[in-house]
Image (cartoon, rainbow over all chains, first blue to last red; front, side):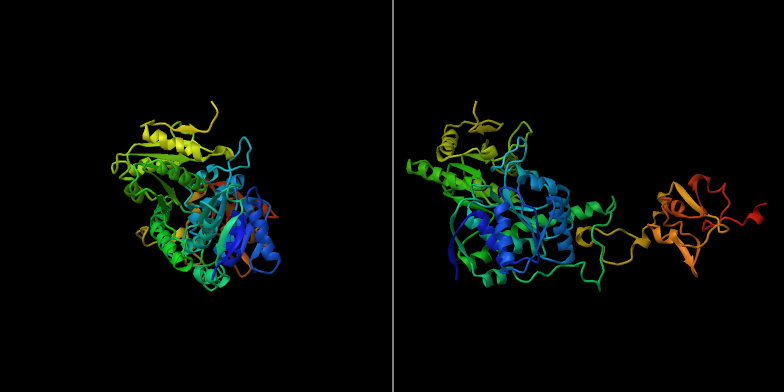
Length: 388
Length: 112
């Protein structure tokens, strides 16, 4: 039995965390993540959850405490945004390298500078090579559902990698929407009891975490990490199916919206997918065969599946909510072009948009569809919504 | 011993057997080596307490020299020694300084 609540993305995430009831949460507040942890701290203070909630002095300490607790054998979560993730940096890589299945909601916010508290994906994109699985959410419902699924994905023995649950700062985190939530026991049964491998607190079987790993072994451990990331694709699909059986809501590695017969397709992530779907509806009403491919799983990058899904299109546009500053284009576009190379010759243009929370609306995305239809193409990114 | 491939190794760089540091022979890192004058040594064992590589031999509560297979030559033992019984010499000078295989200098009478 589920119930429907009016929840912001942050509150939806906090509800999911409370129902998961991790052993340890170590956290430091940062806009726009603050109210997520505020709400979760309420659950702890009210005695609803028994999580050991650790307030630390910085995000570097938050991630360090999470790594320590996870190595000890605990199920661990934290959450952050932007500069918080930047300050965690070195430990973010250590969490994935030690193969600790943490779950971290990342409330996407532009990286400084200039300082800005609003949404873009530059924080998540900076961590794209960190060995974390990255899942992007379109709305508060997806935030709730993905947070629950993330635990099961991270802890799968074929994966054992940490997961970032990415959702757009303010646009999702602070917008109240209808969210269907599961019963506490349904979530508990879905995620199950965490069974850590080689926990440090198993003092009868002492092990070493994080020893010096020189040229004779480091490469092998990185190959293991790479293979685990490859395994994650099927696990994300399987967990999505299991979650559908429980909730009725379907999740995969991406969502196809009107793409089956579409000539022109926009690929994007996060809340913009909702806007893009509305723009596609407008175009369809005028007889234009367009669709939207909403990428949910950015890491691992589902290259083969995307190539297959886009094979029938005449042109594709990628909307990137971050710049790579490579004088070429955005990170999502770069990965997609690489994925299609040699498999599919569809032209793929790039639009960098929405940096620092700049609005994107239905008309702007409608213009991208018009550009595709008119054959407008460049091998460098266009900047959508910037003043000349 | 053949090194294992990535499919055989424990994941995440974990080492699943306890007490494995003894197999990591860090003595080859040494630029300097400590040698000890047992005439001066008072067996306070501060060197044994502070040695980061557990390279001080102790038998019957007496300091009995160095494990050069693991000693990195950090010099902490010489710094902490309250009676200046420990001398740090260049590794390349080891044949010029009289000391046994455990770094114990010969007694004064034998030297003269």
